[in-house]
Length: 210
Ligand SMILES: [Cu+2]
Image 1 (cartoon, rainbow, N blue to C red):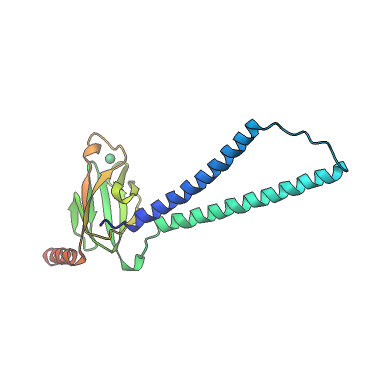
Image 2 (image 1 turned 30 degrees about the vertical axis):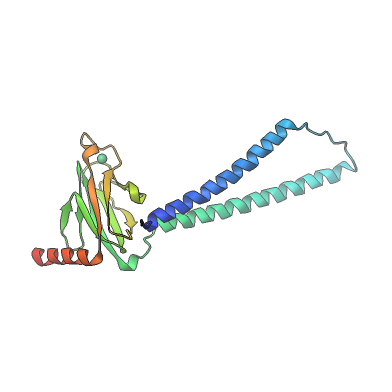
């Protein structure tokens, strides 16, 4: 059974919110348009003093404006809080930070112990992995499509991306920014392995590297 990584779950929930809101707005707008097309406008005879009808219109306009402002404010605040769910790592205290360097035409991954690996990234499952992404030459873009994550790799700056893979699995890493003749071949593999497997591998590196 496939378990959905948290980044994918967040993006899916944001997409669902907008799908529901968009559908509701669509239904209302199309209904009003259809109603307007098939009904004749009623010309009301002015009843009562003109001043009170003007007053009513103003009150109605103010109420509608307030309702619109409150709906838009709620949606806006929700959007900003959803964005922070994606940009802020889920568990920064219990995380591992790995440097990712893009270069024509390969990816290098540098672990906290200084070990650098080209072309494949090995991470433990169930742990928050923070990637510090940069480039040595031109603009690249680090992307793992199955995990719904991507970040630009720009020379001279670090862009952060986090991910958490719940079960042992393998994914393709690609470059999503046209960066030269070898762009299509600028790929790497992501291996998410059990914590014990990862620790055994990582520990062996530390003793070898010194
Ligand atoms: Cu590229």
